[in-house]
Image 1 (cartoon, one colour):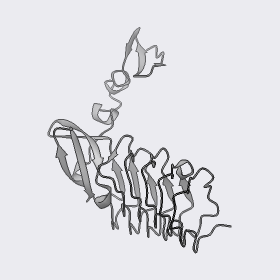
Image 2: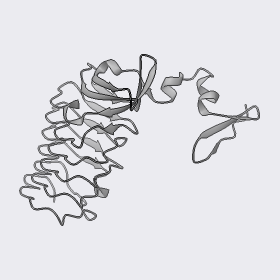
Image 3: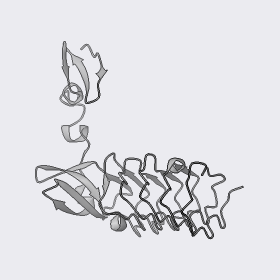
Image 4: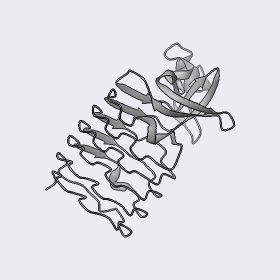
Length: 231
């Protein structure tokens, strides 16, 4: 095979025997992966409670009920032969879950409502959260988003659209093991009014960079850095 790879704004293709084909044609049909896996279709829908919106061709995941300690939310799911794009009801999705140790949310998963309040509240065994694929546009509340995740060490929130967020109160409250928080530096905080106890008892964080944050609308910043480990 002559694999001459090229890319354009719509599709990555490969040259096979002189013909340009899609990556799945080149690799999937050769037996390396199945088609659903190649295109990011999840195979773990039984791990969730969910509802289906047929008009929007979307599945709304409402609660993780799986036994796997590594929870993965796929960009789409095949249900009864049809493909549905994934949205999540963040406020009930993982709240209080004692099973999960890691969470990965794939690219393009949408938050179904305007709130992510208490999404991971009291997930006492959660250690890592890669949420960089999550579409947070339109979300207003981050209240207690990671509050009391005492074993959480790493968060990736790269690329989040936070332009509508108003409430960040208790966001990292009592995240006593957190050492890595990626992406927050570029958050748009121009609408935020509440940062009460945002970093409270983040004992292992030594430094934060808020130089890009617009805090002009904040009127509640009490105990924001209380009991934290910053110098």
